[in-house]
Amino acid sequence: MKVRIKFAKQGNGKFIGHLDVMRYFQKAMRRADIAICYSGGFSPHQIMSFAAPLRVGITSIGEYFDIQVEEGENVSSMKERLNQVMAEGFRIESCLRLPDSAGNAMSIVSAARYTVSFRPGYEPDGPGGAVRWMKGLEAFYRQDAVFITKKTKKGEKELDLKPLIYELYAKDGTVQMMISTGSAENIKPELVLATFARQMGNEFSPFAFLIQRDEVYAQSKEGAFIPLEALGEKDG
Image (cartoon, rainbow, N blue to C red; front, side, top):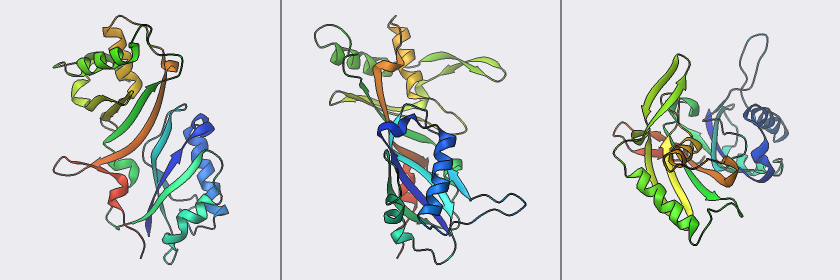
């Protein structure tokens, strides 16, 4: 039986790298007495697939991973059992049964939504500096094209960022951004911010921003973006 787990990574949890997060949840499965399935062979491991690795230093309220559990496992109580063994900075948001035909979380990711704000004390100088900066970013997004030079395994190539930024707007002192994520075309919010800063002739300082991932999406055949959570169903 396939199960999709959504979790939040907050506070000091943002300093834990992806590989350590994987190991952490492997231990949490045992502590919570989850009947997770293991692979075969001489070195069996838990069947677990994470949707999209999160960079160190970014918080999230929309992380996902899929597991396979033994038939008869009580999915409806899984969230409570896991939260009882979660360390500070981690919180389980939902545990949902998946249909057998569902693709794993890693393979179906197409986009992610982020909230970006200024770290206190790092707002742009001058009256209304932050508001002025965010209006400039919105104007940057309204350009017909945003070309950058991106390094690849084969060298460098020119890439138009604009088709990979699905939404970008200011709201309540933050920037809301939905961008391409996944194996095909993957960009990071820092790349968007750095490109804007370069166009404005400013130096980009990653430490000046607080970035949170709010949701991860798959894309339907019709082109609509669907939260990974919406592809599962509650047990019973």
